[in-house]
Each structure stands twice: as C-alpha cells, then as structure tokens.
Length: 252
Image (cartoon, rainbow, N blue to C red; front, side, top):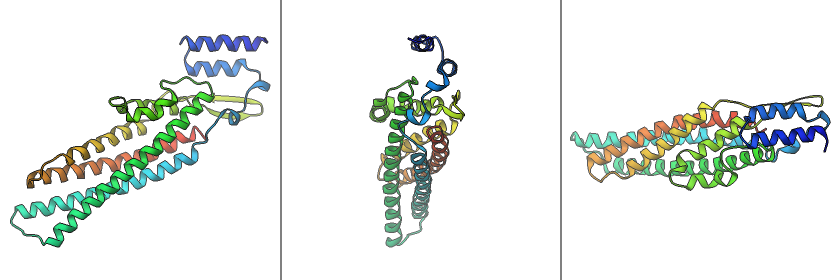
C-alpha cells in the first residue's frame, strides 16, 4: 500500500471515530491524495439537482399563488357571513359562489402541498445519495429521506435535518488544472429552516380550521384560520423557492 493510501486510511478512521469534523476531513483528504489520483467531481456525483431545484422553486411560487387564492376565498366567505350576522341577506347565488370558491381553494391547496411534498422527497433522496457517493457522513440514511416524512413526530424535524445536511455538507468543487478545492458550508440555510416551519404551520392551521363546527361563529373562525394559513403558505412558498434554488446549486 502506498504511503498516501495508508494516510487516507488513517484519516478515514479518525472521521469514523468522530475525532475530526467533515470539513477538516475534506481539507486533509485534498492534501493527502495526489492530484493524479483525485477522482473527478462529475464521476463521484450521481445526481445533478439543478434542474429539479428549479422545478421545485417554480412549484413553490405556484404554491404561493394558490395560497393567495385561499386567503381571498376564505376572507370572502367570512365577510359574507359577517354581513349575514349584521342583518344583510345575501343572495343564494352569492352564498353558493363563496362556498364553491372555498372548496376550489382548499382542493388546489391540498394538491399543491402534495406535489411540493413529492418533489422535496425526491430532492432529499437524490441529495442524500450524492453525499453517500462522496463518502460524506450525515445524520440520517437515504431511507429516512422518504420514511421520515410519514413517521409521526420525526416528520417535524428529521426531513429538515436531512435536507439541511445536503445543503451544508455537499462540497462545491473549483477545478484549477488537476487540483480540486472542496468547500463545505458550516451554517444552516435560514430560508429552508423558516420555510419548513411555516409550511407545517399552514398545514396545522388548515387542519384546525377543518375541525370547526357548523355554527355561524365556528364557520367564521374556520374561515379566519384558513385565511391566516393561506398567508403563512404564501411566505413558506417564497422561502422554499429561494432555499431550493440555493441548495440545488451545491449539487449541480
């Protein structure tokens, strides 16, 4: 075994024993491996996520528009019911139109949430696969990139950690001649963090609104919660669009 391979083996053991950080590991690895033996970045990568990231960003913007539609629909029906409480008698067609608008807003919101969820799962799986192909350690395996979204309690934080690791630990590579410079990001992506929290908040508000009673006051409360949830969804969608554009650039 050549000297540099023995040094690399020792370095791998240090990382395995958690005696050095991933950032320090990549720095030392770049110094140990001879330039002629450094595998190309494109050869190590399995998935290029720039296209998928752009798709998620576009979908997130569409999700924000659907959330705006939800705000308008719920606010419209809440105003109509308030008018009814104040003695104004709206026409049957106006009531029916308000209900249909809310139904359409809820339906499109559900579809947008499902589409966004599926795309984020695909992104998380592929990004985690990229980390594995580069030998970079991370907190959760590829199976959790899918399973964590459907596991009670864990779905509130594990998906965030998986995608956060994909952001922080995926190395950019600047190639100059035969040398490679790997740089890791040692900070969280706040767009992803806040967007993830708000995404769950708008889902929770939607569920709470759906559990209200059939009385006039309960329907008004449900409409107010639905409108607020839509407003939160607008912000979450915008933050997702920014976050996945940034994170996907590290896997491009």
